Image 1: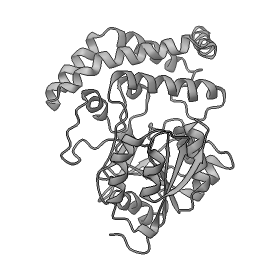
Image 2: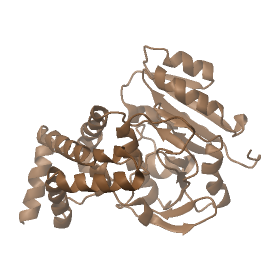
Image 3: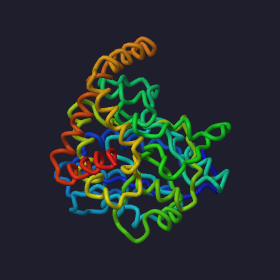
Image 4: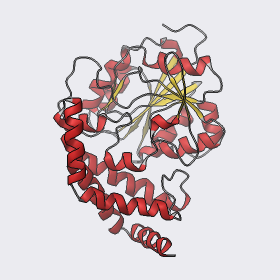
Length: 340
């Protein structure tokens, strides 16, 4: 149990028709050992027509009803309503697996004021006795940030950001432009509003991390023992749909003014890296061999998803670019920059 010196936390949860997922998430939140008077729950209900809102009311939260159908906007609405010293976003398809989850994430921020935020793995493979039936979910969850091969290839390696090991957590130094794709982060709320979000309502995860880091908060605590599970994609269709949704709702519309870009479209090395991956993924054999090696090492056949996921997610993104005028323009400019 934490003492009275620990800060208050605002937990923000946007949802739309998530009754089944909330039946898993909310009981896990009830088990938290963080003092009840130190934590507030801000739920943003986007016009749900199932029993989600009733579950939220029974749980005990500040319920905000909206009709935006824009999850980033709803995250921002929750943030601008929050009152806690710290703020954390949850997705409805998550489950907190350790009773001291918030205690562990908060501890580094209490111990060291130079640490701007903290985070943990996206999926705890060893949490509880509940078996993960979906082999695809297990496959992507071997990566600490739940990245499929395409995502991991272009994203900076989390392990390379570690600069110091402490008793219960690791210190990472994030460099603007080279930040790993960390989604769920416990921020210092006022500093986040000042450096990353300001008066605007939407909240886009990676854009916020980039701006928060540029604002001088480049030290992050990585707390692997704070266990949570994100049931991100339990089948291939869900995974591809989420990748395409990110492309269509965030990447393409905001491309000209995005702060968070893993690749420099004016750098020939980065352009060659894109071309290499597209060819590599479609060769099938290299990822097939990689999958076999990892399946043997981890003793889990879920790793055999490697070649299938690599090809289908890669080709889906390529088709997603080609199907949109903005996407075709970006591809044309990439080849133009490569030839110049």
